[in-house]
Each structure stands twice: as structure tokens, then as C-alpha cells.
Length: 371
Ligand SMILES: Cc1cc2nc3c(=O)[nH]c(=O)nc-3n(C[C@H](O)[C@H](O)[C@H](O)COP(=O)(O)OP(=O)(O)OC[C@H]3O[C@@H](n4cnc5c(N)ncnc54)[C@H](O)[C@@H]3O)c2cc1C
Image 1 (cartoon, rainbow, N blue to C red):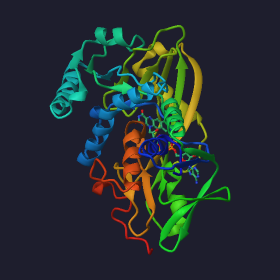
Image 2 (tube, rainbow, N blue to C red; image 1 turned 45 degrees about the horizontal axis):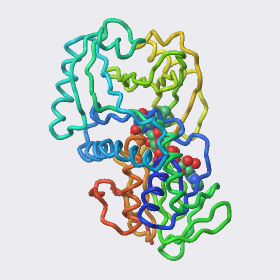
Image 3 (cartoon, rainbow, N blue to C red; image 1 turned 135 degrees about the vertical axis):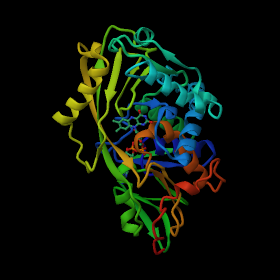
Image 4 (tube, helix red, strand yellow; image 1 turned 90 degrees about the vertical axis):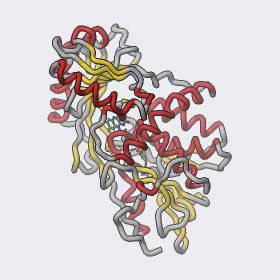
């Protein structure tokens, strides 16, 4: 497997559980998305209008509690996955009501959405004290958060315990005829029956020498971590201001994470910019002015792997035997990464995947490479 972000780590975990011999390699490239991701798991609030993506994201959210329990059962629980609920913060009660109706309409098909109701401005502030006064909200009980760094480390450790080997270094694909037969990691050859490429925003460059053209572009996201010590933030819900791509979420250590920019066309520039920080903090303080006295604890930047559309690029690569791609998860990869990795492992091991991957063909709408 190339790439040990949440997708590659999940793939290594699933494949090693299935008894495969796994080598996982990562170059620790600056800007890897998993290390910067916020960690909101709430596909039901999304306005994305794509049934294939929505079904995939819901399936991914559904299996998170079991995954967290599995890791905890193996003594690798990090406790960062928690269903804390989400508030879609609205301008007035009418808007909160409309958001509620929209989410409720999906609940019959997706019972994991859990409790859905309108909260008065006072009720919303009782759950998330820094919120501005006069902001009612739609509450979604099933929403959760997770620390992407912690769960990814746990997945890698769980894979290691089942015999997976981790190799630090930059991988290049090795090809013989029309088949990928392994990788070279900083010049060291590693043979394999199948290579899964989960290299995030760097996937396009990794495949280019094979003549495989797929579209994965980096979309920069800047995000800020604030400490509100000594406040107990462990049960604070995720805050999703209606009609905005920005958000707030809290972790156990008095930490509130506010984000994030979505900088399409950023290229591989991983600087944290004045404009980026200004945007993130201004949006956060507009919805939650009570955060103004928080201490800036960390600023992070990551490159979301953005495909040609919202759907993942997931499955075998037509015309190139021995190659599976798992990327393109964009803004929702901490939600969908564990499922994407598990499905990629199934494909690599020749098992029929639990989900139909036809809509996610990595080369969709593109000609097959000459193999
Ligand atoms: C600011 C921000 C906020 C986000 N918030 C959320 C959120 O709230 N909820 C959510 O669901 N998602 C969120 N996301 C999206 C999510 O973080 C990403 O979609 C996900 O982490 C992508 O994981 P990945 O494994 O595909 O890629 P990455 O995490 O980027 O991993 C790819 C790995 O491949 C390695 N690599 C690349 N090339 C090579 C090579 N040649 N050899 C060896 N290794 C290589 C890199 O070092 C890297 O570690 C957010 C993203 C950002 C940036």
C-alpha cells in the first residue's frame, strides 16, 4: 500500500485482518490531509446532490461505531470517536425548522441520524456556550467527531500487530509489461501481487509514469485549534452554521477546532497564510464570539485529494493489472476513509466488494491507458 493516511491505514488494517501479507509505505509528505482534517462525521447535513456519494458516505458513517469498538477491543481505542451530535445553527427558528425537516426526511432510510429537533437559541448555547445569542439550531443526534491522527495511528498499529510491515520512504510503482508488480521505496524494491495506491493528493503524480491519467488535485485547507482550558468541552456538539462550509468542533482536552478554508487551485503550496487564518477565525468568531479569548494552540494545513467530482476514485485501474486506487475523498475523507480502505482491500484480495464500485471507477470518463 502506498500512503498511510486514513485510507491506506484502513486498507492495511482490513487486508491484514483478512490474512494478507501487507507492506505499508509512507513518505510523511508535508500537507497530508489526514494530519490536518477536522474530524466531523455527519454526511446527513450535506447539501451535496449525488446519490452515489451520499449512499457511500452514509455507509461509511454507519460502520464507524463498530470500527471504534473493534480498535478499543484490541486495546487501541483512543476515545476520540464520539457521537456528540451536531447543531446546524440558523438565522431564525424558521430556518432551523427547515433544516430539521430536510434531515428528518432522510431518517427513515438512515436511522443512524438519530434524534432530530429544533433547539431554541438558549438550548443551543447550553450545549455550546461560546455560541452567539439568538441563534436557534437544528440538532442531529447521530453526528460524531474523531481525531484523524489518532485513529490512523491506531489502524496502523492494529495492522502491524497482524504482521503488516511499515516502510518509511517515497514509493514509485514498478511495472512489468502491463502489470504493476510492486514498488521501489527510496530505491528499495518491494514485490507484491497487488499495489493499492492511497497517496491522496499525490496520486496523480505517482501514476503518471505508467501513462495512467486520473484527476486528483490538491485543495488546501487551513484550520485552527483553540484551547479553552479549563473548560470541559468533551461533550460539546459539532457546530455547522447553516449555508456555510465552515464549522467548529470540540475534543476532550478543552480544544475547539475551527475551520476550514477550501482553496481549490492551491497546488501543493502548504503555507499557512494571513488570509487563510483571517477567514477561518472571522467565520468562527461570527458564529461563536465566546471563542475570542481562546488561546491559539495550533494551526494546521492539509491538501484534500479532490477528484473530478465529489465521488471517490476507488477500485481497480482498467488496463493495468495489479493496481488498485483509493483516493479522491475530498472534504469527507475522515468519514469515508475507513470504508474506502476496507473496500480497496477487498478488491486487492479478489473479494467481491460490499458496495458496488462502478460509480467510483478511478478512470471514469477517461480513456483506458495502453497496458
Ligand atoms: C482542513 C481539513 C479539514 C477536514 N475536515 C474533515 C472533516 O471534518 N471530516 C471529514 O470526513 N474529512 C475531513 N477532511 C478530509 C480528510 O482529511 C481527507 O479526505 C482524508 O484525510 C484523505 O485521506 P487520504 O489517506 O486519502 O490522504 P492523505 O491523508 O493525504 O494521505 C496520503 C498519504 O500518502 C503519502 N504519499 C503520497 N505519495 C507518496 C509516495 N510516493 N510514497 C509514499 N507515500 C506517499 C503521504 O505522505 C500521505 O501520508 C478535512 C481535510 C482538511 C485538509
